[in-house]
Length: 353
Ligand code: KG4
Ligand code: ZN
Image (tube, rainbow, N blue to C red; front, side, top):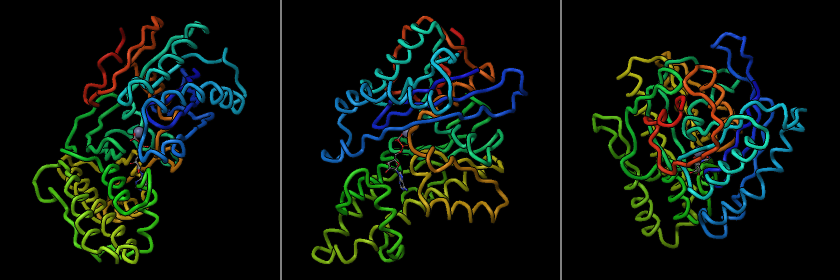
């Protein structure tokens, strides 16, 4: 079974081919044959953030050439594709419609069924494509630009939200703090690079909800604290920028690590999966590794290239849904997208019609 996956929920166009053998045992993880990505970051940089209309138009330009690239790399043709998968949500409505529209047009032209999947489920399952894939069940720390959640993951589609952010996401906290430090867009990777040369204990920044007794997060206060510090420093800011970046990163990472450990304690689980763009952060990985090792807990990450948005995780999510019988692809091509779509309602519209 060959699945083409198309991701277009935000500012990255991703296309990938994933294969699975229908006669293989269900625990066999589908294989990634090829994936291709086009990031629009340079285009949005000038505006300091994603411009939805520009994002949609650019997805239109990229998606078919990327599809040709992956077919060529995997030495397959359009006719070899069995199912066309796309990101149905959550994300920017216009951007999602491009991927959904192209997927359904391809499906109709090739007379193959389609399946729209959940972007965050894609992130959640992406570590299955790594050298060290996890096994169900596990606790997942999902840290992307728009979401920060701790989930109990029992099986494909069986997710329980343990805690989530009540305001900004962790990625947003990185991006907004980076903006205050004059680091451009998207600031997460730039802030973490600068933090390498700074002192993480130089500034005392808040760790909201650390002792709240639940598994929720709050990051909005952090950017206010960073802004106050930056203002206080005034002319000294350039000389102390790395220290402030390192202290900001330390505050975010500290909260993420401690709440993840609390989630493992609360569920009694011995496995942690980290997914989403912030999962690429080196300090986060180092501290999670240390904390998990201390407790004898296994921790799994996606390959670095598959931490941020990509088509591979979308093709994989469709493949694992089909493989587990949780979803069936359909051929009515009457696509609708879901810009807002809570992960614990993932099965709505994804079960057999
Ligand atoms: O998962 P993702 O690619 O997109 C969403 O679905 O939102 O996550 C993007 C987020 C951005 O906020 C970006 O700044 C952050 O992930 N990010 C990082 C790093 N790489 C990406 N944050 C901190 N350190 C990094 N190395
Ligand atoms: Zn994402």
